[in-house]
Length: 125
Image 1 (cartoon, rainbow, N blue to C red):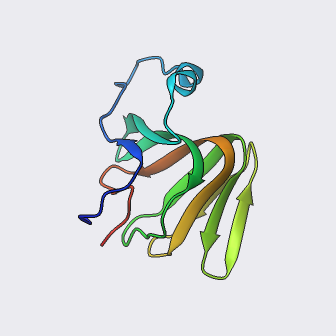
Image 2: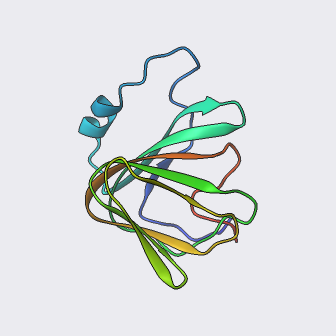
């Protein structure tokens, strides 16, 4: 993992166990950070994360795992080499493993992510 520090509120703890109700709107309403990422639960070998984001993340990649993004509300952009994926509510995209990408949100945006349980959100060194 990189020794760089980032101005993100990334919470890797699993907030809910299997069988617990997850109140996503309450978590969104309680958030005050511009780039918030909370692991909601684990489903088999993957985790589901909630992102409440606005602004830019940094360029990074995940060498061994794909990354799924689903937009609940707002506008989410994923810059990739040579193109930008523009996601609106109800749309989703999978960033292939090893692909450099930079997520951005020009407005407050709520996303759900599905990733392998061992993924490092800030990317692989």
